[in-house]
Image (cartoon, rainbow, N blue to C red; front, top):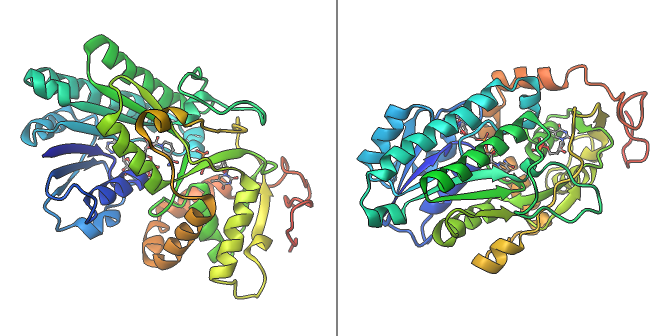
Length: 381
Ligand code: NAD
Ligand code: TYD
């Protein structure tokens, strides 16, 4: 029996992880219990977990990782032997508008979670202490930005975070490392690249482009669109987390990537092409006509890339999804979940979109007049 405390399990990656673990045929059948603690911020959505509402192996508890009384009770009452921390503020653009929540959750909240976990862990009998794991889900953004020809990030890269979000995650990674070295807490850290797939909140690039395309709105590409990201399909990431949790070496860090580097503008064109093939726009054109270059993100990291050879050689994990197959599944999923989209894009979402995009002209883009890039295959309207 594995008793796992998943924090942030109503968010994008956390809910995919929980659903994957409990999926029939996954191999865990009846041998697993998941306690899902989530504060249900704007990014957390209990609807993501509707398929497992009646599954006795899953218990959802609304609450904060910083609430030591609550977390302590959960750890004891459910005899937790694994903690996986997905809970975070996760959007770079929001961290630029206001960094407070990022410091509160990603650093101070994590510190509370580590301390509460440590108190519980040190009271366990020695064999249970040895089996226990605290796993921190982190990001490649802690390593900073690469030039186009630089080798991809490995676990050995120095931390050089550039955004408030990345800085808060880097601080979190340092805390986790210190709690292992100082107190012996059996920790694992993963640093992964940009995830995509079902249930991703439409503030991030891929779902935002799908939602805006379908709504006939502009597709806002920051700067010259030549920033480069590695894209990891979320279920590949969930498999990697399972591998690290089961067989990762205590105290180690594992970099996880999708082997799918892509310039943002090429990614947006690919999404448009898939969407146009699956659900052509009513005016008979191509969604790419909606692409609009807008002013750049301050401090925008140019490139992230992951060399995932450590997790491959030590644990035998490799991503299964190609960018094309993953994107097709993702676009299909969003087309099939219009009710979910309608619910998450109401109210506060609209306020965020207005804050982030209204009045964001193309001054810093290639074409200063209207923000559209003359070199792209876009018909200016
Ligand atoms: P998300 O924003 O979709 O979800 C975060 C979840 O955490 C939400 O459900 C939210 O309600 C919850 N939460 C926030 N503050 C909390 C608190 N104080 N206590 C309890 N719950 C809280 O994020 P995501 O994309 O699913 O990312 C999950 C983790 O993976 C994050 O730590 C993020 O830094 C990391 N990560 C994400 C990506 C990506 O591409 N999405 C890439 C690398 C790393
Ligand atoms: P995002 O999904 O926010 O992830 P991250 O900043 O963590 O990499 O953005 C991915 C890339 O897409 C990033 O280079 C910023 C860019 N981007 C746009 O060009 N336009 C947008 O509207 C958004 C949200 C992102």
